[in-house]
Image 1 (cartoon, rainbow over the protein chains, first blue to last red):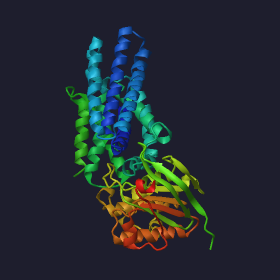
Image 2 (cartoon, rainbow over the protein chains, first blue to last red):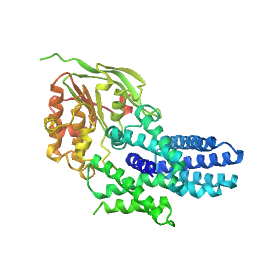
Image 3 (tube, chains in turn blue, green):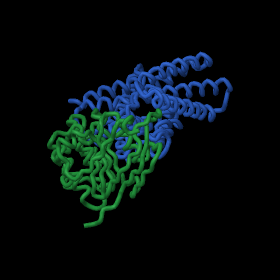
Image 4 (cartoon, chains in turn blue, purple):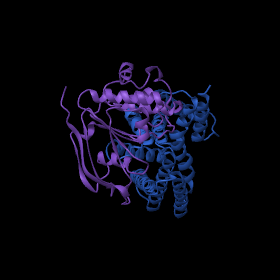
Length: 261
Length: 208
């Protein structure tokens, strides 16, 4: 629970920056790309009866490859097509979603994993996976919080001053690669819904409070995500019929909306 | 009084659009320390492209550019994209993105464009003029050797344009600094910018 709570906060801070760079829809595609890699990895591991170690590493490695390829393709589209980027991202998302379902058809054993990977179940996360979430979440949280001013400056320059992002060089490259790793790990262990909700629900609701200030906004995003994760998780433990991640997302929406009052 | 020296020398410059259409040829001018140079001309003549060429972002097709400063001492303000930003920044947040020493009210007052009492306004609810003055202040707070501005008078009313003129004059008056900006001719004529060197760009057919 601690690992997913820290991860939720880190994702919320990352999501605020991705939304500021108008990358929400692109991130949905990247997350779906990671999902495709995870499903392919699980399918291969089960078909080839690989070891437990390979069972953990292969889906993550394939998630990185697939999400990296999705990121590169979407960047290329933005550069070449220039206009209406969200239309292309939406089309890409639909194609990746179809690919994910096709992969599940190739590996019938994936049936039982599909729903878990999309909607997540934090109650069944292993100790090792929880430690991985805690480690990656803490590292990302510290890094994004510590560099919040310079990351926000780049977001501002990109959107308002039209300063081009230097794709995979320097600080922009670190931001892109770090984001990919965190999203892949989160999709693999906590699921697609948890990842996307933690990325974008807190920041979308925090801007509706009407109060300005960069630090205040980022703190709100981090707290809402962490609090929702804790409360939602405890609710799902208390009421066994309540699935973990949807309970967390519903709590997040409630807490986030309550900020206005 | 220190002698003026050339900060930027443009000689017989020619450049065009990325798809190969010629824009300007045979352009020569110098920006000395202490000078404000305004390049004026109608829409589509290549004013903004000139600024990209000066910064080394677009290669010229002929001619040369000599800079007496490193590019890290150049600050560029593009035309303001007057749109909202997802993060709920205050004007003070935007100024805090400036490199170097912390932003204080007295430093903002010294630049002379913004009233420090307005720094807690939200970027998303500020007027176009306030946003433009904030971005100009952000650049001048960095105390760059060379400032490049694309249509800096956009969104500014008459008082704002006067404040800008005075701020740029103060900026180039100290140390060895220069300003190159592009704007429409009317903007210079309307407000009167004495001492500003004006260079007119003509459409490519005439230039060629």
